[in-house]
Length: 458
Length: 130
Image (cartoon, rainbow over all chains, first blue to last red; front, side, top):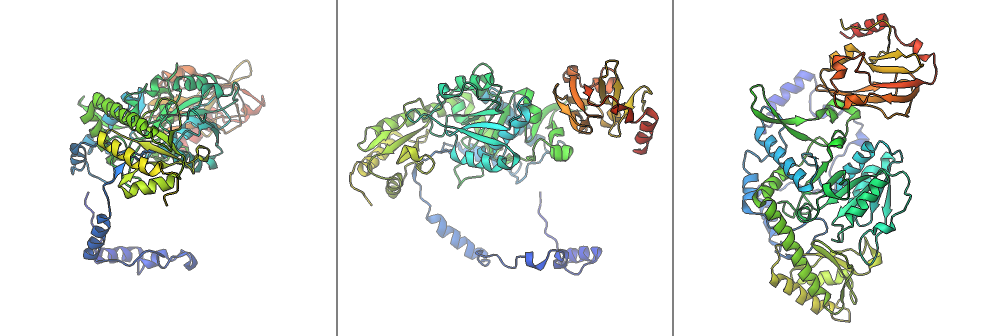
């Protein structure tokens, strides 16, 4: 799609047509007191040459660090073909073109993405993606409130083992809609929600959120939690890591009935780590709930000549048809990120994705064993985990240790003290398939030097 | 002109109401409404036991063109819903005044339905929309 700026002549002719003298005059009705005259803190414009110089100086400060931070966004190997294909002109667009008559390629890709996600999660339906994992969980909460018609309470149970950022985003989005989020605490030695800690008579609750793996990397007892929720007339919202889903029991098979809504962050599927985004959220559900699902859904159909074609489907849920009664105001998706994810999944295949998950787990297990053996460092939880683990520091603050490690070009983990003060000086560490045995040794060696010292290093 | 049987009552929002012998009211959407909406693909029925006010939206009919709310013509309690529409929503197109009924309600005020439009008045409403 070309971008054509207006010429001065065109602008003048438009202004003449509506009978005003200047563009400024169009804003006359905004009171002067409300107009912003200058942008505080925004520097003056630079020339292209100056900008290029500035940005190359900034870029030279970037370091290729050895990254052991996960906490919601994960470094995985991305085959070169993924972004080579994604950035071809046919796909590369800031906006997802949905017109069936002009966009069969894009629509077919989205349809294949949905098919892959539904298969990976063992669910009936997937939408064409949402903005990110955190807002996807908020949408899943809103959807569960709409879909659980037997529940009148607008109450949702959310374990504290759900990502702290996700919990904040969910609160921000749903709190003004009369929805109450009740937190479930975890068992401090295991890092999970023990099913026997759940109330026998929880009352009227619309849904239980189950993270798998949870924020600590720990695996929840998904079957028991799912059955407990269904036994108490709640829907089950699974918030899962898509890489882990290749190896673990998929949400559609949890417990006797399977999760009802599945959401999560799609970034691990071929999207590079980049200052928080753009990433994408995914969402799947049971067929019975599809009319309550937010976002776009692409369907396969036949045209007048009986040829296969792809088109938007179930649009009557959406705001351009249902107006204020729409299922959601989310009518767009992260098309380009989904394009990359679809190519990533197609290149790896089910077996490749399973191997990524298995090697990530094995690397984390090897790293945890090494770190747990260091004096002054201890493992925090004793439950099975996926590709992250929490360690506690005896003599130093997590902040201090992470700062020291970064001096050695190691991003050693994520400081979780602010979110989980009860765990003390603890950090969350991840090792994906990108780490070699040497990398793990190097990390353990550096950490031993810093954490083993009893006196403060700073 | 779409048909509007004389034995039924109607609303401006295109619901029809049939008074049954046991005092309950059967509700659906008119032939005119189904014709405007086109092929039905989904009908969301209310829950039985729900108390509704007059004019409260309590069902949704979704066609290939649009999704529209269905409003309760009078106040009352939903006592039965047409579950068969889940599998065959196009019954609303084929037989709007018969098998295509949507819900049955027990009115709070046994007389309120009498104030609804008769077939002639409804025909006037429908004609004005053209």
